[in-house]
Each structure stands twice: as C-alpha cells, then as structure tokens.
Length: 373
Image 1 (cartoon, one colour):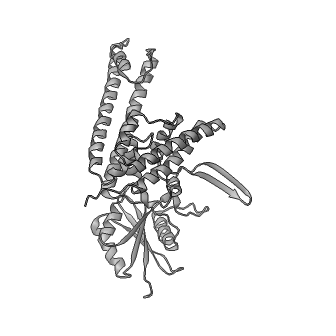
Image 2: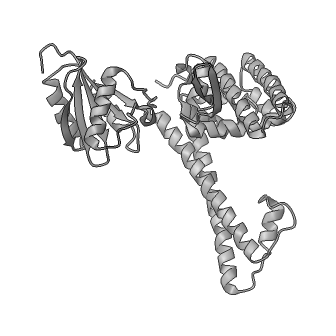
Image 3: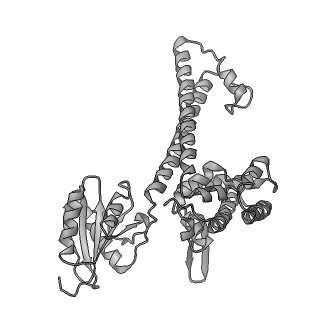
C-alpha cells in the first residue's frame, strides 16, 4: 500500500461467530485486500482496529443490517471510528454473479462503499431501540393471541359447536364459552386448554401494553407520540409503534422521502416513452407501514371528532389540532373520491395511508423532542 492512501473503506461481513474483513484503499482501481475472518469479541475488534490504523489513520467501516443488530456500530463509534450500516436489499449486485461467500460479501461492501453506491440505514439510539423492542413484542403477542383464537374456533367447528351471535370475544361470547360442553372428557380437556391459552395470551398483551405506556412516559420521543395521536386512526399503540420504528422523523427532508421509506410509493418500470406504474414498493419499514395502513381504514367514514379523539386533541396545541382537522377533511374526501372512481378498496386505503404519512411528518416537524439530558 502506498503512503498516499488517506482513507480505507473496511467491509465487514458479520455473523454470529465470525466477522469476515476486507478493505479498499481510497484510490479508485486500487487492489482490495481480504483479511479473512476474525472473532466477534471486543478484543478481536480492537486488534483489527489497531492493525488497520497502522496502515491508515482514517478508517470507514461498513456492514449490512441484519440479525446481529447494531452492537458493532455502537462499539466502533464509541472508539471514535466511522461506521455505517447499510440496507442489504439495496446493495448493487451483478445479475450474472451466482457465487456468494463471506469473503466476496466483505469485498463487495468495501468496493461499493468506496464507489459511494451504498444506502445507509438509520441506527436508533439504545433507548429508542428499547421502545421499538416493546412495540414489536406486543405485535408478536397479538399474533400469538390471534393464532390461539383461530385454533379454538377450528376445534369448535370440527365438533359442530356453533355460536349464534358474533364471535368477537366480548362478554356475551365469553359467557357462552363458559357453558360449552364437549361430547367426551378428552375433548373437554382440549377445549379448556385452548380457552386457557387465549386467557394467558390476553394477559401477556395487557402486561406489555402497561409496560409500554410506562416506558413511553419517560421517553424523549413522548411529545411526538402524543402529538401524532391528534390524527384520526392514530391511537397510542399506533403512535408509539410509528415513532419507535421511524425514530426522528425530522431527518426526512420532505414527506415524499418518508413515504418512500415506508414503501408506500408506487413501483415504476419505464422505458423510452412508456411509463408503467405498479403496486407499492413495500420497501423500508414494514411494521410502521402496517400500523399506518390499519389507521387509514378509519377515514372510510365522514369527518367528525369523536369523544376519544377530542380527548387526545386537548393534549396538543391549536396548530396541531388544525392539522388534524385538515387531514380529516382531505382524507375522508379523498377516500370517497377514489372509491367512486372504481378503485379497489385496498388500493384506496394504501393511498390514504400514503397521505397520512405526510400529515405525520408535518406534525413531527412542529413538535420539539423532550430534553432528557
């Protein structure tokens, strides 16, 4: 390596038990060197940093976002090194390249980082990631609860035991379940176990929600969580999930960037004079996109301020209340217009969710974060 090298781009292919390393000098066309695998202990990382610093004082580390999380990013930045985490789906790949190894992945990261062709992901702060883990734990608990309910319904259907009303797990439905009697003792045990599983999952969801509310109370993002609840269809769980997944929304320069991050913009395949738009890209954060689409269903009905929404509006300034009403008038009208034009309901809801993102961005821009220093 020549003495004129001023920067090294270090690609790291990170796994549970090993990290494969390759680095590329700043000069275009310079040979990319593979250092092979190292361990994942902090002492292994320190040894690698010392070795690379002996060759160049300016290092830029890069690795793919994945199941190993952001511990490596935080450790390297704490040591004063520059580190970037990139989106795996947006790394340029050659269509004819069908060989994938750890060494090749590290080399590709170093080369594309040097070329400036990588898209970096937002790395949340530790306290922000903790809230995100809580919201995802609740989402998992809700999925488990839904699975338990489906198993019970399937069991009752096989036994030809039918509930005449609406099986919405309300008081009347639960009283009926308490009176169900199966034909055999074995089937009665199965039934009781299914009912017990549902009760346990209900309790799990409630425990997580209580903990989530307690943790959000002391969170620096709480003012934004409270503010965006001024929007119709955005109650506490939706608001907490959105902010936990998106982080600091003010990092997006305009609403269009936020829409793209959420994967709510249409895909496109254009060539020459032909321009063809397809379904939404579904790139970016699927958790935030899901709760936003769920909230968009509330705009099927005429614009109005319900009792619950009025309670949430009392907690925010007048300018945010004005944005909330403007959103209601526009989005309810938008839903009626798109539905009348013959659009499929799901497409209409996605269009509403896309515009909801713009109002979320507008409210977040006007809401300062809490100072917890």
